[in-house]
Length: 244
Image (cartoon, rainbow, N blue to C red; front, side, top):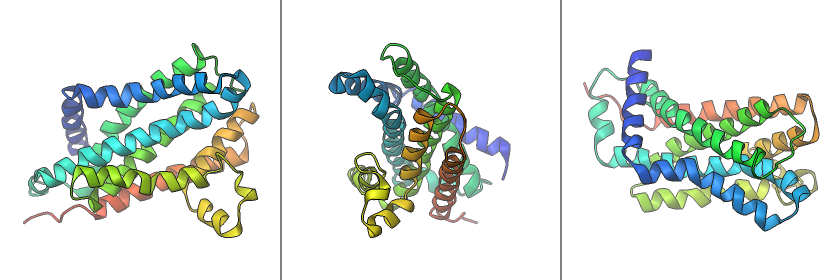
């Protein structure tokens, strides 16, 4: 692994994103627009305070999954990855470069969405704002990692989009947004316990209900970070072997 190669890969991806105004607008603007829509759909401050923090993390997760899976697929199908793997470039260098580039973009995305939610939309948060930002950024990075992994199983951009409901919707249904996990049937609860989005929702509930860090919140953040690292490692395993 070479930090210089990782940074060079990240710079290349960021340069591509900077010239792709539609994708950049989707990444930065869509979660904020969805938060604004949610605020006026709920139309009650107490309801927005309850669901807003959870969806503030879910929206970046979903957007980054879609954007990352499609962007990576383009490089796979266009032959860019094969050409890159003929160079002295390790698999982990490549994946970390992608993660760094999209992670920096996600940082801007999260900052804009959280600022609008906490100021204009009046989101009332009992926990720390910094913890909220860290959790939301973790959610976006999880979307990046899963998107990198999912891109290996698609052959076209249409197939990559189809993976979004396959990877995201089951997690949304079982994450505890609609029904607490403790009230689910045993088989569904076991399935939910294996899904990282369930820990993200639980962490956001802890953040909105407590002013200080709790053991459950720390555990959930650790699980999310671990799932992100695991997805990156699995994504690296799907990359083509280096050509001698």
